[in-house]
Image 1 (cartoon, rainbow, N blue to C red):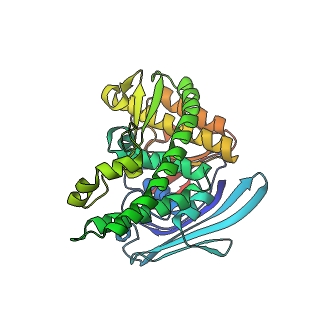
Image 2: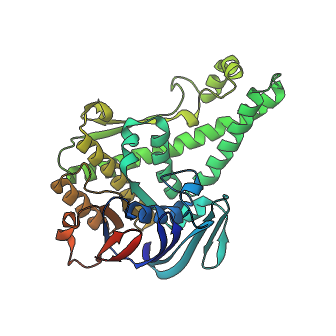
Image 3: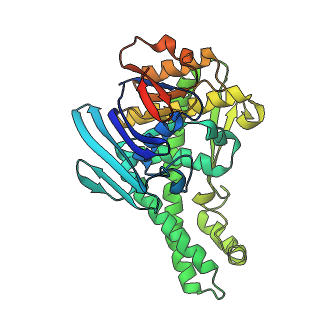
Length: 362
């Protein structure tokens, strides 16, 4: 899926922006605070229904307005189809989304229409942060290649919430606790199976990407399922019973899962420089895009905020070359136009200049 054209209204300092997008590369340059990241944020809102910078939408909607609107014309090359997609978010939390006039009610519906990969200043948390970021990375991939995963995950979250609410009661209804626990057991098993299968498949794509990027070495991924592999999840729930009641929460399960990322046998967070860490984040995201394309037959849209940061010119060249090889559309920002000059003149490449929330062809 490609963005052919994009319209943005009242996203931060972008009061009214309209651009025709390049089919391959879209480079946006300008001084800090000019609106470059806000443009990427707008595309993210279109594909996810939320911002990647703030949970509080009052900080995203322009101060002079009550709501933001992002819309786009989408093109699917095979078979060749065009669709119109739009999202409205208000400062009060209201949400509306439509595609070809049909209402969408879940953010997951947006994600299926416009699969997005983001690399920004916070992406280091994929290696250096807590397990949540790595679970989100993993579940993005499973969601897009396993049609049943979205519904399964919603049932798991609902059941887990019900069990935790029961655990926080002063007096435990044993029959209800057994019922919610029994429902949670197969959900844990199914989610774990999907995740393990996906991670195993992702490994071969990651090896190919790393082979095209200089300076990383062999990268391996290890899945930690969220409970001891020596026990079944049912046995773990039984052993955790008193602990869970005391803490008011479910101690183990798929909600505690993690991924360990190793480079040449050492945890990546312990052995890589800042630049190598950024390159590895790109490698992981590119591997997901490879898997997605092989499985679903289409490319992701990449949002690369401040592409030159922590990447030297050679690594930037390698990352962009791999994106071009995948035939992915991408939007990359930077301060200096010269960082992108060598890409000009190629088919499907566009340059935009941002200044005080106004965009012009660069």
